[in-house]
Image 1 (cartoon, rainbow, N blue to C red):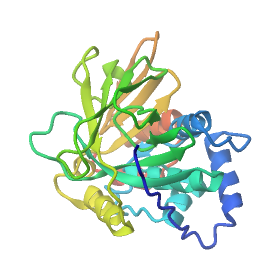
Image 2 (cartoon, rainbow, N blue to C red):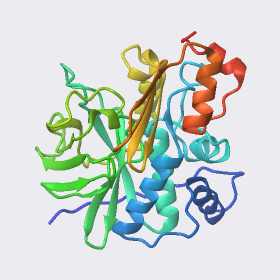
Image 3 (cartoon, rainbow, N blue to C red):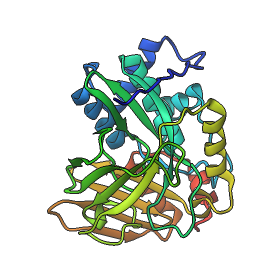
Length: 299
């Protein structure tokens, strides 16, 4: 039997109302009218709504604002300011809001394998480990490459998402092994991703993780590395994505791709700051000031 100790992170959200006020604001942000019931269905509902409402984006990095993953900071940015963020921001918010809903959970770290990196990657992705009555599940509202659905923490667990992709969870080692103890893989439409997937019809590694305890300092370190290191994807590209019920919208630098199952793909090269700002607003629901758009290293 798997034995997991769950750590419930404290809120550092002074000035943002009570826990229930924050939960209600979050649910309104993601378009859920009633608080979901604790369980697998409620978990899937929260994560899907989160990924369809709050974009994955790193716009703060090229604008020089950096990124932080404290509870108050991500709530203010992703909920109150209606911005997006990358994994440490998204999954901090998801973890906090799951806690407020009544889900026992904690954040664990992962190594991104998408794109077949030549070397072992740093632990610069995170996801949420959730304890349900039937056992542990994983949830991930912050994987920018594609939609990664909740799955039971069970060797061989699989899921199919609305974009037609298959997902698989495999036990590959012990906690502390490289690249991790568990592997998340995906097989499905390339166009329902951010462009790093190579094929439509083969299993491709997404990330590996283990269940080791993660202190706040390690989360802060991973977030800081992702926002500052010269080899990080987020210091080399400007990325925005949004999961759709049956597809994916992706903006990598100036290249926009919007794909929905059964529909023609929409592609555009955004050659002006005005076109880029319009795409942020119309496709991703992001409002960025004109002067900030022109400051991006794209034009």
